[in-house]
Length: 587
Image (cartoon, rainbow, N blue to C red; front, side):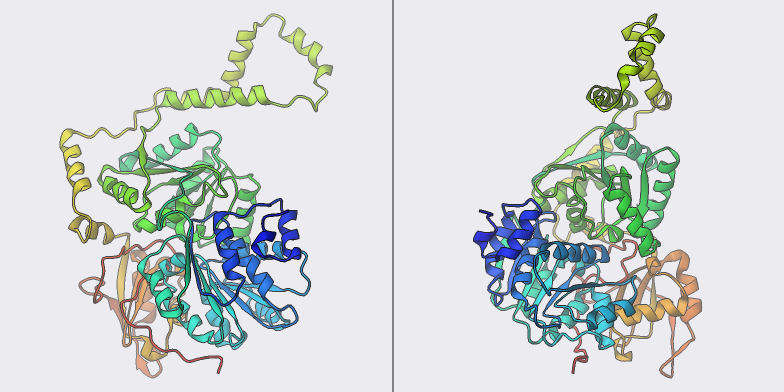
């Protein structure tokens, strides 16, 4: 008997699971499914990525909906188009033996006309990203009045990306819902606030400790000076010849530059960032999934929602400014019970971040030396020899050529043959690394003492932490005299400034909207262009003023959260003002 049947799932769904080769639920599935099958209980599920959360909410949804009703009964909201497509594909697999059940993925970067047409044909489950969902609501292309079940997947990530107002708006307009199911890897105050404001006595299930990391991940870090960061990355890749991994960078420019340098050096790597079209992204991800690519390099925004089996390593080219981002980065490996390694390259001045992370995820980080040139050659050599020994020769007619081979090598000893094979394979490595420098950072006692003071200082509200959270990442802040009173919400305001300036959203950072005005973070190189395009224009019979903000980006009641401006993060992280009431577009 399949253990999923004991959870209360009907035969058709269990058959689909059996077809996939699964017979035992993961801990989050085991605890969530019986609760969610009631359909009337609000639910909070806290579990790391890769623990089977999609099935935990997807299987009960498929059982609860009525296939005879051709309108949206369930709404799944998630942060990125990749995750949106992944969830939709999983649901398609789970409903293999169900008749009349239809799902639709709605997300930016694809034809909204096609999505509207598919919605009108009748679907029961809609999987959506917040921005595209709001757009469809405004066009009156989707009716939320009959939605019974609302799922918020990767809730912490959606809030990190600035979708708090959009989530509030969606929840306020699903007035006939029977339950909200919230799934998240971490439980920051913003996620807790959603539970408090919109949910009634939710059942909370935690798999592992709250905000903790995956216990199957080995967290390692290497200390390097900034000028040798790329060389350190290259050595770590070479030192792990069987690596199949993702490298995270802070910016799109870094991702592209490193990808180009490693590609020229002969590595199978591609970059994933916001400048790629959906077709290009799909092509890159297809190559990575079928392991044509050994490495994928991406920004946090571009990599959100990536779910690929078998990733052995995650490499942080730089530690993220937002500590919770580390949890999501590292969660790309060690999925479905497998083990994995998360490597971080950091400067000596960043060691306090390692201490923060250890406390946050309740895991020990292991400091390792950067491999020497000889270490790399030795590791590559033995990896090759192991592959040589394990090579399957049973499918070729090699015996035909054996007499000629024996004759050719009759004057050559076995030892010399092995040496020649090694030289043929490793000549480039030996030349590259024969005079390689020791990249391990040599800190004097004064520097060590300085780091020690930083490591042991108070953490809550400390000057050190505030400095870390406020570091400048190449953005400047612009003031504009337009706000919510002008009828803007986040997505429409973003569209307005991008249309007027003819810039791409990847140059933007945080956007903070108020009633009468707003502040926009933008790449310093593009700030002048945006000001020139927008300042002096007219909007609703008033002159638009845009200029560089004086005195920085200050907000009342700022709680010291990270002021991270990761590439592509186009919306504010946290609001310290009450969300305004919005027009109900379904009335």
